[in-house]
Amino acid sequence: MVVLASRCYVGGDAHERAMDSLRSQVGNAIGDLDVAFDVGLRDDDFPTVTVEGPDEVAARNALAEEWGELTPQHEDGSVQVGTLSSWDDDGFVLDTGFGNEVRIRPDGIGLGQGSPEQIRTRFGLVQHLPLRFVAGPEPELAEAERDRLYEWTRGTGRVNVNSATRAEVRATVNRAGHAQDIVTVERLGLLEQSIVCREGTDPPGLLSSIGTYMQSELLCVVP
Image (cartoon, rainbow, N blue to C red; front, side):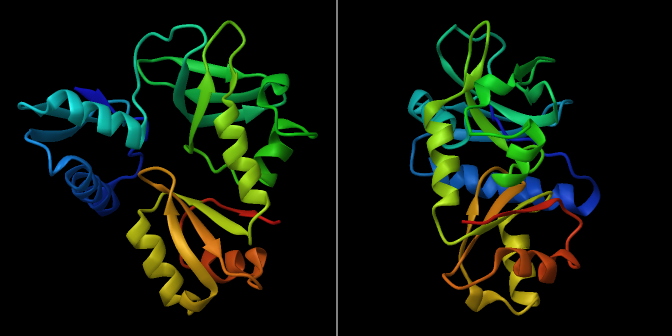
């Protein structure tokens, strides 16, 4: 069984849509392998995928590569994944499942000047976003994670969203009349997405336009 590093924290019809979306994504990821799979959800809102069959090792590896895998113990120096649970002057708190949390202190964030809140806002780190970190006595964001986030600030701008599937975000952008203003909607997690703006599109303006249609946290990444 693989515990995926992305939470399903919405309720009602949105919960069913999110789980249906996840089942489809898992099928796309491992459907060509010789396995049967079942998608479930733990009490802490982290999904599980149970796989059985001749290719189950390959399937588990593919799921871990695609989503990140939560494990109860972390070897020092290993790269792990947690979801952004909270933040304060003492850093970021990542939920790593199994009742565990990891605190990334300000000097372990490594994303430039500013308080953790200012850094979170500048890089568009919406709550529940999966983030990679290096485990140890003083955990820190992984170098590959820092590189990814810095790359966002060098592009054409983004609007990051939580509490919605990729299909829901695409539909909202279309409904607001901005389909021509974006390049794509990039999946960051099950319910965390990144709307990549076209050159010349103003991310704050896009946020203002689509925000009235969404019950989500939205943050801009402005180049």
